[in-house]
Image 1 (cartoon, rainbow, N blue to C red):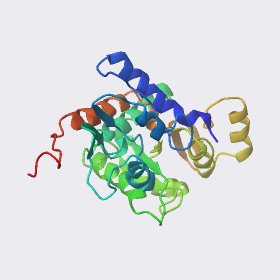
Image 2 (image 1 turned 180 degrees about the vertical axis):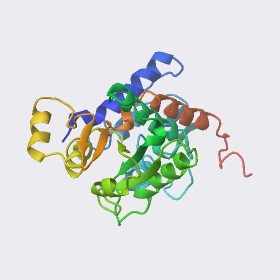
Image 3 (image 1 turned 135 degrees about the horizontal axis):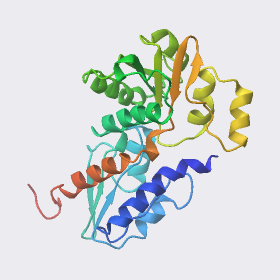
Length: 270
């Protein structure tokens, strides 16, 4: 439905290919081509590392895709299996890695620096909001946001730090009520700038739907940075998938997988 959703994945693929450290680096998707099942099946290397480019350990990243690739959904991350003497490792999603804290902080710093105001606020003058999807059907949907809120709060960088959600309280539109400062930065905790990031969240933050659609048709970002609303100055960032530091998170997942001990049950009963 949104061709931009694949861009963050291809960006990371290109960055890894440029390092020339792996025999092959490929992208695979669940709902579009190239399909992840087909891509993995085409590999001939003796060791295959698979990194799910997802925010949470949700239905697709923790159950549907690993099952389709032959992994047990009940085994912990990183998941490991052997087939015909070949080793397959499926890491945890990038969104649950500790390095995501740096990604979110960098996103907030960058947007304020890129769109300055006359009286430049310090981070202590800013309320940071991490926007997630949230759903009562999967408790993991909000855990990732809450984990990052706790991590960033512990650093005492911002005036306040909050999680807000599309489908659970506190909602996106509650940010103005929750903000303890005159400046707000909202960072969508999504991999790609799809429907939620480009349309739903800007509208819930108060942008007129017609204006959002007009900007979309013109190929522009759907939020004007910064915007004054409800007596607050608000910056809204793009999703985190294209943040340069995401490459470090992917690399760290790969390094973790590279150090997984080779233990084939058929060869070693211990």
